[in-house]
Each structure stands twice: as C-alpha cells, then as structure tokens.
Length: 187
Image 1 (cartoon, rainbow, N blue to C red):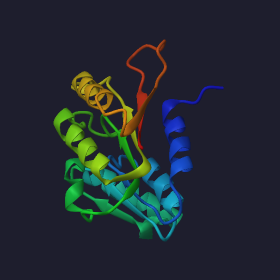
Image 2 (cartoon, one colour; image 1 turned 45 degrees about the vertical axis):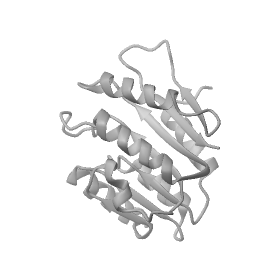
Image 3 (cartoon, helix red, strand yellow; image 1 turned 135 degrees about the vertical axis):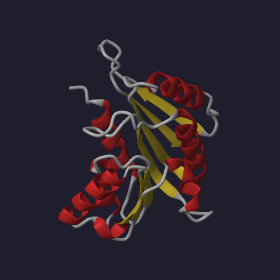
C-alpha cells in the first residue's frame, strides 16, 4: 500500500536520524514533527523548533512536556529564515523538516512565504551533514501557496546533482492541490 507523503517523510527521518543527532523543525505547527524528532534524537540530541506563532510554540511545548520529550527541544519563536542566528557556525544537522502553508486549525492568513522559505532552505543546506536530509512538505492550496510551490520547485530542481539527491513524492491523480514531498539528501 502506498504511504501518504507525510508518513513517507517520517519513515525517511527514522532511517536518517540516530540518538544524539541535532535536527531542525523549521515549521513547528502543532508539534507532531517536533515530537517525532525529539523521540528520534533522544535525550542526548537536540531539536531546534521554529515558528512565528506563539500559539504553535505553546501547543508544541505542552505536547513535549506531556510526553517527556521537552528537555532536548529548544523552541524558538522566530522565523525559520533566521536559523543561522541560533546554531553554531560549524554545527552539523542530520535532518530538517518543513511543512509549508498555514497552521492547521489556526489563522489561515498566516502562512509561510516564498522569500523566507527559500532563505531557510538555503541556510539549512549549509548546516546539513553528509547523508543528512531535508524534508519539505509542500501545501499549495492556500493564498500565496502556488507562488511558494513554484519557488521551492525551482530551487530544489536546480540543486547540483553532484552534491544532492532530490526526490519528489506525490500523488498526481488527486484533486484540490494535494500536498507533496521533497526529500533532499546531501551526498
């Protein structure tokens, strides 16, 4: 049976991340990816979780406390385009996750934007270790979503083949802007 793109992303993350790794959740949202990342890195690892919305940071913090995963997570109420302000210059990251669009069940007028998303992706690639992965879930069915989709498509399709493998995982026969996934692996 085929996996939904988000579930496939989680399987890739599970195959990539080991205990003690450092990872980034570039769009914390409701905290589901943050929780998974925290479980994967374990108590010796570190998760940097970014979101511009206070409600997302609070909900994620609460979820992490309830599951005992809070100690290894640094929640940062800032845009993902500023990741370089929170990481050490030579820090190596095993995985970075992005879920583009808006906060589910949140204010749909607050969305990720092409300019900041592209900046964050480019900066993330600089921190990614060899054989680390960047997971980008693209949701384009919101205002501005198609513009962001096209910008991300352009960026990842132009990554040099000698340095990166880029996989696109999507259903092509579904209506209403189905989400799709990019996995970028640094060689």
